[in-house]
Image (cartoon, rainbow, N blue to C red):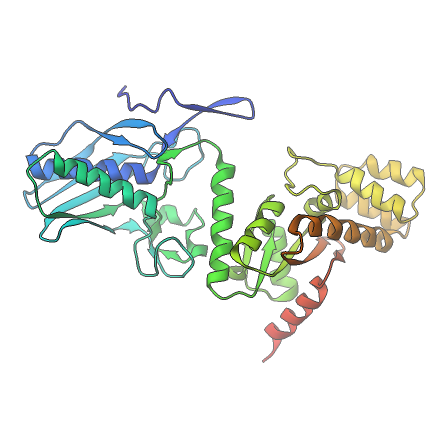
Length: 386
């Protein structure tokens, strides 16, 4: 097997040893360097050397190298290590041709998306090749030019034949990137921690909502919250940023982006955790749903037997059923709202006004904090006006 230099790099994630990979940006840079060498020397190297911003040196093999003397084309196969990346194994192509203009100009071809909305790291109309990969591609081409006969400049086009289909499995359509995937990779290396990539995507979408002119940011943990807002309050899905379990980080990102108002809506199974100050709602970070529901029930006047019954429940629907039987849903949910507001306000430190709406499938809206209900009523009325 060809040694690329990535084989000895691992990360420990949840006690498991997971392999590093390299980004689409690194593949594009290597393919562009190989194509430049092929065009200027007439020979395609077996592999090319790339120094990544992460500090890891790679030697990546070339595939499908061809040239007609005026332009050259090479590909490098993406390797994502143990990160669940949709681009793993795809070929990233670079086509180069000599230019009379100095420097290196980079564009995207088939399968590389085009930016159609503001707020991203590249301007509207440009190929979705981020600044980090652009710098890597330019540096790789310049290195190849320095090794051969000098030419004024080079035009580079990056392509992924499978990119348009793969883009449908990414955040790109929501971000306004049309026609293909983005060429990404700040460090040039894929670290097998998909949470980091998801957090970056959430931050990016929040910044974009601000760039698109939203005055109030609307957040939901996932499809339950999104569908509830769509079906109950007529809010368009494109306006809702899905934040998965990262409530605290999303609130931080909202403040960083310049928002002053944030509306968060979610299922009680997730948002009950906020009443205990748990700002990452993934079960591995902290569950406590039964304990927090029991605490709210006890504060609302439940007896010890009711508290114990709630603690024995597996789902929040079971817990709500017990509260309904005891006629305690309203007071317990009011306590929950107070606790959520306390911890959310402690997180945002006065930088944001946050309204939180908690619902369940069987009971609908359960409780709300701050201006959440007023905001949602206003939105609903506005959307339903003829």
